Structures are given as C-alpha cells and as structure tokens.
Length: 157
Image (cartoon, rainbow, N blue to C red; front, side, top):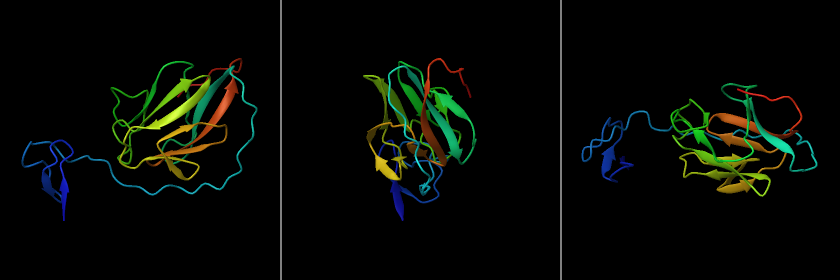
C-alpha cells in the first residue's frame, strides 16, 4: 500500500522515512485515534458575556489540567510548541489542530484541517460555538468546556 507525501503529493511506500521526490521527513506524523464516547450529564449554565471560557482535560494525558481562554485573540491548539497557545504533546494531535476565537462574546472552535478532526459531544465538527458542558476531543485529549465568572480567581496550566 502506498500513501502520498503531504508536501509534494508524490506516492510514498509504507514505513518510508522520507519522501523520495522532495525529501520531506515522514517520521513523526500524526497517528490515528478513535474518539472517546462521553455519556456524562452536561451542566446547564446561563450564558452571559462577563465570563472566561475554560478547557479542562477530563480524559487522556494531563487529566485535571485547565486552560483559561483569553477574552480576545486566537487560541491555537496543536502539537507545535512554537506556534500553539495550547500545546498538546501527543502524536494523535496535528501540529496545528484547531483554533478558538471569541466572536460576539462566544467562543467558537474551528478544525484546522487536522488529521483526526475535532469532535464535540461525539460529533466531528468543522466549526462549532461552544456551550457550557460541551466535551471536546482533540486527539487523545478530551476536554470539558466551562464558563466561569470573571471575578473568580484566575486559573492556569
């Protein structure tokens, strides 16, 4: 079975370390995963704009870690530590897997053409406005999205 080089699209045999045409290193590519089925109750929360979004790792590597989402700007999620706001060091995560923007007071996640996709509440999505209690899966990481009042104490990684 052959695959294609992600750079030049040339045919590449399985277990080849580099592309025979352009020399792109194929080792360390994103690995495939299967989404975790989440059947937990989702908390209901009245939405207001005076809050901070939080992603809490609930399954997978780094369970319990929380990431506060900034009130403005783009949040990049992926395996590239130099370019991602939220660095997820796992081969099931693409280098730039997803971005989150705050638009009109709501956080919106976007899949950045990742290999394994972005899953919200067990559905593969390209773009989705996040609601309190949503479960997000990015590679082997499963997060729960929460909203906290801005007057609560800040959290960090």
